[in-house]
Each structure stands twice: as C-alpha cells, then as structure tokens.
Image (cartoon, rainbow, N blue to C red; front, side):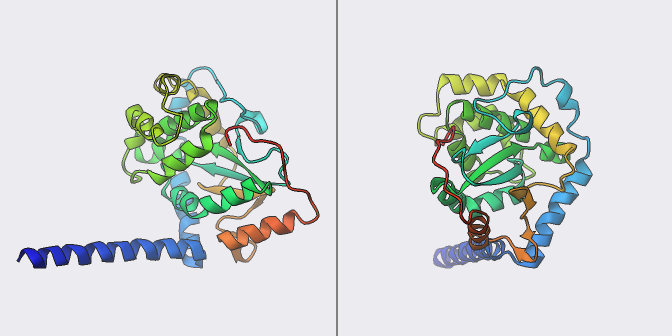
Length: 267
C-alpha cells in the first residue's frame, strides 16, 4: 500500500511538472492563443481595476525617487548601458502573473543583450493587482525594488522577486518581512539600510507617481513592452515575441550602430 502511494505521488508530481513545462513552452513559442490570452488578461485586469488603487496616491507622502532613476518624470529604472543603441521599455507589476511568466522566460535574453551593450531595459512599476485583488503587495514590492536600486542591486532583486512570485491571489509581498527575507538571496543587499528603506516606505510616493502614470498612459495592461517605442508584446507586427525574435528585432534596429559601453546603475 505504501509503495503504491509513493508511486502515485511520483506520478502526480511528474504530471504536474509536465503541465508546467507545457505552459512554459507555449509561452516561449509565443503561440497566438496564449499571446492573446496574456494580453486579454492584462486588459481585463486594467479594466476591472480602473481607479481602485487611487486612494493610496494621496497617502503616499513625498516623492523620493530611487538613485539613478531617469526617463520621463524620473520614473524609469535602467538596466544596461546608458548608451546602448536600443531601449526596451517595460511596465510591470510584481504581483502580475503574466509579468512573472514573461520575465522568467526572457530573463537570460535580456541579460545577454544588456551585457553585450545591445540593449538597455527601462523598467516602470505599476500596482494594478493591489486594486484588483486587494492587498498592498504590488506597492510594497515596488518600494522594496526601489530600495534595492538605491543599493545598486535592482536587477538582482527584480529577478529574485519574479523567481519567488506568489500566486496572484496571495498578498505575500504585502509583508515587508517577506521582502527583506528575499533580499537575503541577493549578495550584499540584506543590510539595515535596505531594511529601514523597506519598512519606512521611503519610495512609496515615487511608486504612487509611477502607478498614476501607468493609469493615465493609455496602456492596455501589464506587461506593456515597447522596443524603441514600438509595442512588441505579445507580438510585433505579425510575429509573436520569442527570445529568438527579440534578438532578431534588436539586431535589425541596431544595424550599423555601435554597442553601448557606459556602465549602468545597479548593473
């Protein structure tokens, strides 16, 4: 009986892993059905959430931008060389499951393009899931990510947050203790200064300003991804976004241009 139970458990685990891998492959391949579903999910979240996170704006306090923030109104956190010839603009919510799938699939591609000076990624943080699902995890995680930027550790902490993203309905990121715990996965980030920044919500006002910019920016949902100003998620023209296609699009945009060489804050 025990042997049968163990065997059944192993079979169930294998089936679950196969299911997860199938979903991952579908996203990588960029199948039309999944791409449309991803975009529709983002639109649905935004439509159902319009205005719901506005009350936090008034209570967020003064705007304190993280170190090195740039772009329009100082709302972008850049990863990659400042003089890279192409720019990928990404609007994300750390609680957004499609954002998590997107980042976990494209992470290595982003880093390869950043490290080679071909691409810089400008991250903008949104908080729509808090309004849709309740809780404060989007805001708290965004503030913590901004605190990590102060410490020069944004890219690493950004990746850790998505690698450890809770279920959309869970507000685990709403607990500062969970965020400071995850900081332990980033070498040199777990400091008293970082903990104080997270606990005091030093960048809450900046996060609120970024969230307001997302709401009024005419975006369809998260993630919103633009390459040199052109939308590329879930597709660019008739081509679905995949790691291979993203590399191709960047190469086409950079033809005849020199790769960037300047260092990037937090990189």
